[in-house]
Amino acid sequence: MPLKLRERAFITAAITGSGSTQDRSPHVPRSPAEIANAAIDAAKAGAAIVHCHVRDPETGTPSRSVALYRQVTQAIRESEVDVVINLTSGMGGDLVLGSSEKPLPLAEGTDLVGASERVEHLVACLPEITTLDCGTMNFAEADYVMTNTPGTLRAMAKLMQELEIRVEIEAFDTGHLWLAKNLASEGLIDNPVMVQLCMGIPWGAPDDLNTFMAMVNNLPENWIHSAFSLGKHQMAYVAAAILSGGNVRVGLEDNLWLERGILATNAQLVEKARRIIENMGVAIMTPEEVRTELNLIKREIN
Image (tube, rainbow, N blue to C red):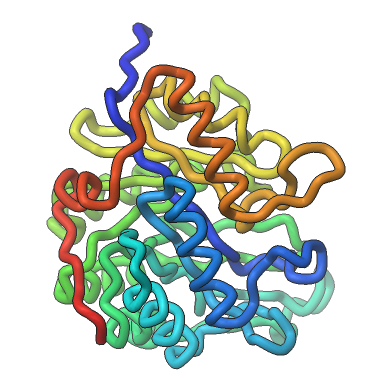
């Protein structure tokens, strides 16, 4: 396969995520102000897109609070820094079974709600991009299942389409791409189609290069892709994503470390990724260039 690098690539900074990382690094932002400030700093460092979850400001646990999302998006929009806002829609699909011997009743941590409730924050905040996790998957935690049925995904995709928010497909395995292509063929995901290849997340697609290139080679030619992996492989995947003709995602959602023994900030991870990309001869895209390529609608302060 010949190398076909993009002339210009964009960086997405995944700011805080929904994992249990809030007590493992003081740099993982919790409050809306901390998340917004981290997003702004990442944008200053070169990220064209910021991907945001929200957390309970006191405990740091993941949240679906519409009020918290509004505070984050408003603070980013009121800043002097231009950046594309990408909000998760992955919350509300959490299924935790009781135990291997007695799966019912469901355990603490289960948060299963309908499609409309999962996109309430999108209605309130109108980000330019939102994620759509295109599949159900066992996660590393013992009895936790990320639950996204085809019916729910169709309903969510339709609601996102009606809101004129660009979908970023999140594909954690090859079957997720299969479903995403089906949703696109049904007219539920508009062109240009954007997909994030989420590699090395137990128990989805491993992040070896054979599996990664199988994912890349299964993409329709006109789809725009980005890719990332976790932990110590995050920066290696900056290079891998660029070599595959794609774009890049880094951030504290996926990796806490700048180098061995040194905890990172989001801005530091973006700066490190930017150096790698530019040293490979690829220019960094601005938010406005991303809006043009992805046909995004920039919203005013709401």
